[in-house]
Amino acid sequence: MNLEKYIANLFTDPQMLRMGHGQRLEDLNLGLGWIYYGLARALRPSQAVVIGSYRGFVPSVIARALLDNGEDGRVCFIDPSFADDFWTDPATVRDHFSKLGTANVVHHRHTTQDFIETEAFRSLENIGLLMVDGYHTAEQARLDYLSFLPKLDADAVTLFHDSVQIRESRFYGHDKKYYHTVREFIERLERTPGLDVMTLPLASGITLVRGKPESFDEIEKPFEEPVLIAAKA
Image (cartoon, rainbow, N blue to C red; front, side, top):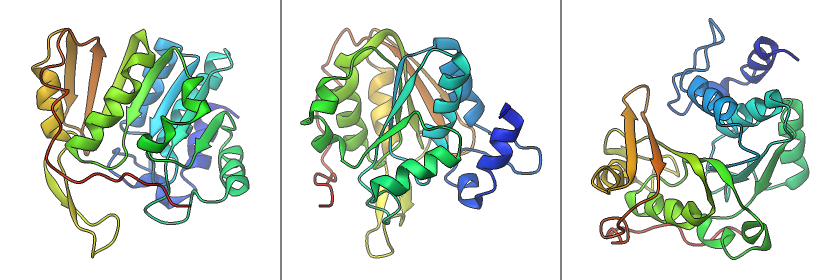
C-alpha cells in the first residue's frame, strides 16, 4: 500500500480527522502528521513511544514511517482507555492497527505511572521518538517526560501536543472538566539549559524538544494539580 492509499484508508474513519492535528480529508493532508511522519523517517528510530491517542492517528502515522524506513521499527503505544472503551480489548486493538496497515504498533493499556512498573518498560531502550499526548496537564506531561527521559536515544526528539494554550476540556465527560496546561511545562523546558525547544502554533500546537537537561531545577518541581494515577482493571 503506497502512502497515498494508506492516508485514504486512514481517513475512511472520520474520527482520524479529529483531535487537533490539522488533518484534512479533501487533499489527504496529514497536517501535523507530516511532522510526525517526517521525523520518524529522518531519525530512523528502531523504537518510538506514543503516550495517548483517541483513535490511533499518531501511533499509526509514526508506525507507517518506521515501516517505510524498512528497518523493523516498532511503536510502543500507551493508553489506559479512560475516554471510552476503544482500547480495552487487545484483539480488537490489534485488528484495528492491522487494518490500518500498521501492525507494528504494540498497545499497552496503562497510565505512564503504571507502565513504568512493567517488564515492557524495563526492556525499552534507545527510544528515538517520544510523543506526549495523554492527559494534558503540566504535571502529567512532566511525569511522562521524566519517566522516559533516561531511555531516550542521544538524538531523540520528544513531541508535546496541545502545547500552545491553556484551555478547558471536557474530553473525559461533561462532569469531568479539567484544563489543558501542558504549556506551563513547556515554559519550564524553555528555561532549562541543554534543551532545544521549538513550538509550532499550528492546529492545537506541537512542541519539539531535543537534548538532555543540564539542570533539573525547573523540571523536577511538581505542579499542584491532580493527575490520573490508576488504569482501569
